[in-house]
Image (cartoon, rainbow, N blue to C red):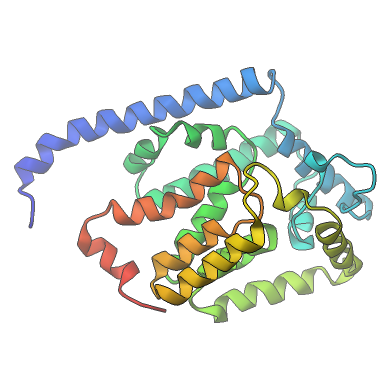
Length: 275
């Protein structure tokens, strides 16, 4: 049923107020995160990205874990390490700004418009994630893109969080990303072994936050994909099977919220193909 222009014009001011309120919540939560949680310092994750970048420039492996607290470990694959090496020369505050910008652009992609970004801001976890210095919204955007048929970003994010690859429907373009990621790491090929040893020598990456058995979650995700052969089921499977499951992981469900909150005609393009 089509809405009349008059109905749309009447509702728009309320939608605008809701969106602006969401942006206000984002601003407040980011401020609170940086001042109350981190005491005015940059988030700990940003210190990890900066340290890893410096290690890459120095030519040392960023995957040492003996005597290192799990919260300071780097669990992403070597292509991500090289990416951090490219920005290691920037001041930490600039790196923080880049991460924030990437996260905001990822949220814009998920939401579909800047107005709808504000709606997501009404959930305080959005601002908390934006002020956390991590890449969960980028991962969420990769899941959204994969649900829409483009798995390239999901392939890249699977080198960090593993499970986004479950959302991929067309593996041809995703495979190109993985191959290129492997080729650029040829000069540091041994780091792949260091990375695998890190993942297999500690349970930290699978036990952060909510202690829900990771192999069980992977099995549930695979079963979901087999039973419901729809793109949204792949997106949900990727969210379920994320290794480290904690409060910020909620944003991985944003692509599903964005999908099912759209008009049926817009949903059909994403849900219609079993891929």
